[in-house]
Image (cartoon, rainbow, N blue to C red; front, top):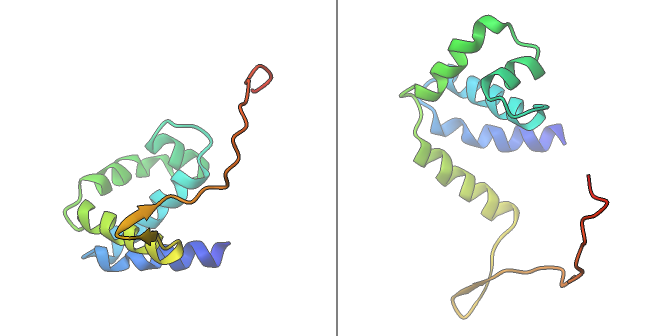
Length: 110
């Protein structure tokens, strides 16, 4: 699993003009994957056991001009398309599902 995550994250390296920005990108993505709550930068710092002094540094990453959101989104689409290619028929994209149609009541769901 770690090799798969590393391989996919390394695909984003070309989206960054600075290596430091790419390294912060990896830290932020891993932090978002393992965080235990949804408190933003604080969650990332806490769950990765980073020095709290890095709070402003991580926030600065989101405002940095060394990366472009459109380039990252395009790279993400390429990675997803290569891992799970879309099924097309007559020019239309077909969503393939498992066909299970079972209603769930939700009374006993946490």
